[in-house]
Length: 361
Image (cartoon, rainbow, N blue to C red; front, side, top):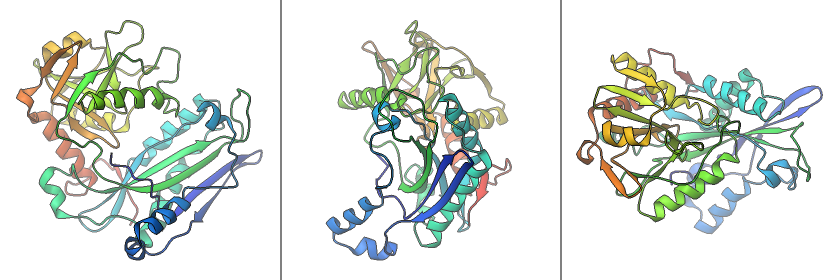
């Protein structure tokens, strides 16, 4: 797994009170990046762990007891020209606002979200806490490239009875992140578990949604797969998404299909970006229901998308013991083109003609 629990020193923390949101930037214990790297492992681990504690926040609350919370994930990426930029933060801001509203929390203002994310990254970067661009990343289409992962999340006020959150905190932390998927294959398997149900919270980036996803992903990896794929709750027939990513199928007919959004599927920012990039190439893109039978019989390329996953090709999909290999187990042309274009824009080797990057440095 790419994520590491060694958050950078500067965090942003806001609290909702009757008068509105009040936020501050806090600088946790740290040394210079070089000094931290030179510490004995146990000492460095202790220093990094200390940045993960907030003793003035309640342990027993609606988040820790019932999973009542939501979060976001976005990246700041080192640029080939030496700069640093965040990818489409305004889209994450809008989704975070919708998620909080969907959980009946007072939503966090979108403009403050963007400002806080960019500023937190900037303050850490100015102290040396950010990766530097490496030309060698270009050799594998940035699949092994480093970036800054930005994690905004909510945390509820103290409480032990089942209830909604009226006075949440919003925290924004930054951590280093590299390749999300690892291992010797990119095989996926259809899980029998159900990720989301109609009229539920599947469309919200709710913390509780990821419990089932974590279990299903663990079971898939234990069985030798890289990823799991969920079907719909009602018919167990239609493909919905992966453990923490949306999914695309490039059919033999030339149609690129991704499951249509509804109240069981998360509206991914990378998903919408890839749809736009595919349409720019003249590809016929449809957001619609697609059955597992159709995917197995008609798909020539498959890939998953997400902030962490980017656009990661899937080489095979197994359902009820039946394994279908896509494109002879090799990365397909369209999958590669979309992946390379997305990464190229994100890391600054392809001009950002769409205005997707927000400059940090």
